[in-house]
Structure formats: C-alpha cells, structure tokens
Amino acid sequence: MKQLLCALICLATPALAEGDEPFGTLNPDEMTWQSITERAERGETGMVLCATGYMLTKSGDHAAARRLFQNCAAAGYTGAMTWMSQLDNNGLGGEYNPDAAAEWDRRAAELGDPVGKFNYGLDLLRGHGVAQDQGLGKRYVDEAARDGLPAAQRLQAAGYDPDEVTPDADNWKYAPLF
Image 1 (tube, rainbow, N blue to C red):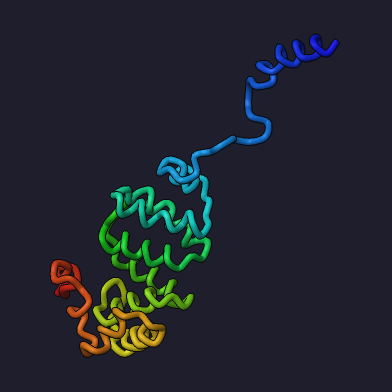
Image 2 (cartoon, rainbow, N blue to C red):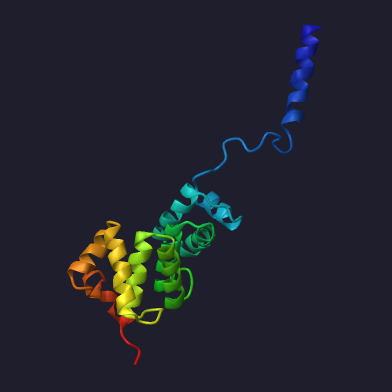
C-alpha cells in the first residue's frame, strides 16, 4: 500500500508542477534593469525602486529613468522631483524644458528638499524657466545653506554668483535670450 501511494504521488507530481505557479513567482528578478523598468511601467514606487532611477539615468537609459522618476515624484519623493528637473533641464529622455525643470525644483523646494531649494534659488537668480527674482532666489539659497547643503554655502560665499556652482559648459543655457 505504501509503495502504491508513493507511485501515485510520483506520477501526479509532474501534473501538479505544470501551469502557473499557484504560490507566486519563486525567485523573481528583483534587481535587474528589466524588472525595474517593468515595475516603473506598472506605476510602482518605493524608496529602493525610486533610488534605482539614478542608476538608470547614469547608465544612459533616460527614458526609463524618466518614467520611474515621474511615478516617484507623483508619490511625493522630492529626490525624484530634483532628478526630473535635471532631466528636463538637459533634454534627457525628453525635450529640453527649462520651465518644467523650474517647476520640479519649486515643488521639491516647497516640500522642504534642500537640493530643491538650492536649484529653485538658482532658477530664480538666473530667471531660467521662471521669472527672475534675485531676492527670492537668495532666500531659497540661504534656506538650503542653513539646511547644510555645501553647494548653497559655496554660492553664498561667492556673493550668489551662479558661475561658482555651474560648469562653464552650461553658460549657453543661461544666457539672456534678448
């Protein structure tokens, strides 16, 4: 009887193994670029997932990084907002759009992000993507400096001269259009 039971179990095992996995995917691809982009396309967010957008954009996959950062920014991740600004400000994974970049910086700044404050302060100082307002720009930079952001402290020490914190290769971008 015991042998018959063992034989029936052995014969039934392949039938039970066929088809979908009833208990979920065993050992899923969790940290591959493909799985990250699939999760971004599904609209998923989370601290670790949102942080992988940095690696996506540094690897050159700006379109995938943009999808992921958009989801994360919509979920309130301020770091994703500052990355969306960087992508829009450099035309990565989309069109060059200084207005959108400044808006992302503003949103991050209003939520208390020091990098957002610094970037929005620079936007205001330059009048890049937003109407120029030196006084408000300095206030945002000052807040970022008080928050401990070294770049903001450097900018303060340089008398709010944007050349102190901006590569000269970007000067064309910030030049007046008139």
